[in-house]
Length: 289
Image (cartoon, rainbow, N blue to C red):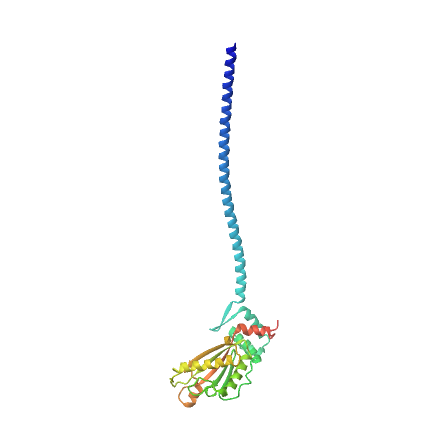
């Protein structure tokens, strides 16, 4: 009987050990499954984060394109306002200046506009209208040696060299300073205009210790006038241009002393700077709003 009880106990213990091992294996399997699921979830999370990063980048790129389009549209509008139209072969005018020009033309005598068939013609009329009101040449000496011509958009003042220089010299005569002062008054009376000083000689060749040839003399003479206008008579230097033409642009044939004297000259060319010209007109109220 006692043996039977012991046998039953051993059997129960063995059976109990078998059940525990099964549970362990089941838990081990569950652990491995959970671990695998966790790894899969981690990978999926990483993939989602990568996709989300790509989406964020696409959104950022899209926003940049939108902003770029906005800027492009703004730039187009600005470019349209300053878009240049050709006037003749050399001059250009922006759309904004064209509008100001139209406002000026509204003040011009209709008879003066009858022959204005092109944009250049209209521009000439507009500038000529305001030049006559703003520029003053009355102070210049009335002399056969000074020729003044207002050709629509350009004022040209030609001065014989005997009023300004000694023969073959580029030093301005002392007695010519009064004339230079008067020229400065004319130039300063219209601050929107740029000024080119041209030196011209006759065809006779020249060469000495300080002058190489006619080109050199004409440039030096123009530069001498420019220096006086800037240093002594307060013309802004950014408005001044010194130009030497030598004997290349004669008024008449160099066949006589009289003709050669006419060709020896200094020409002051007052040129319209369109942006400054119409800008100052608007500021000063010449163009009504």
